[in-house]
Picture 1 (spheres, rainbow, N blue to C red):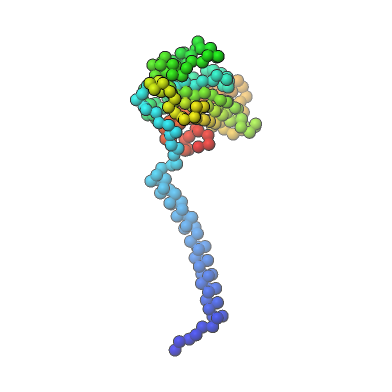
Picture 2 (picture 1 turned 45 degrees about the vertical axis):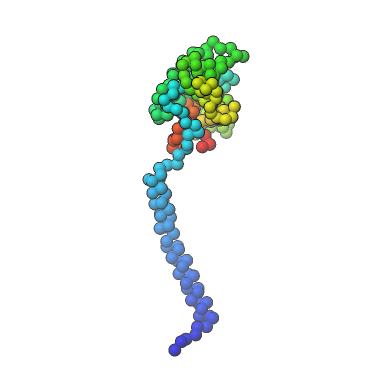
Length: 230
């Protein structure tokens, strides 16, 4: 005999099914959450940490020189130009992005006698130090703090790559260069209490800027990037 269910019986069964489904979802939520963590961990194992791609790749075999310009005297001392350039060339060599470099000191020596009103042509500078490629970074600003309170030195530069053989800029397309901004990893709340502390902070900021300049030219992990905003 087939029994017919009343509308009340149907509604009662629907309520029981709904309650049961909600309970099952509640019980499985921690497992789903843990599963997300497992998926994330698995993704990192397979793909590795997020990476920032190179903006431009240098031809590692070609002789290259790094030149940092501070025509508007933004840096506290001119010696910091050498710190930035040296950190950049050492990072590029260590990462294998370059294997032939002309020491940055040669470029600084080559422009030592130039007049501020008549800067040396960049292609001429590259040829003067027998470099095939010149990486040029013009300092735009140096700031001690972004919020006016905590000390966090930041150095902004405009970067170009000049090819002495071709006699022209090969990167970027923009004549003004590609913007590179580096913020030092000085601890929040740190305040230099002496000239010595200030000098150390400036040196560290310059080294960070040099590393950020180098990272423009090779792929690297986001967590290790010195490039602000990337």
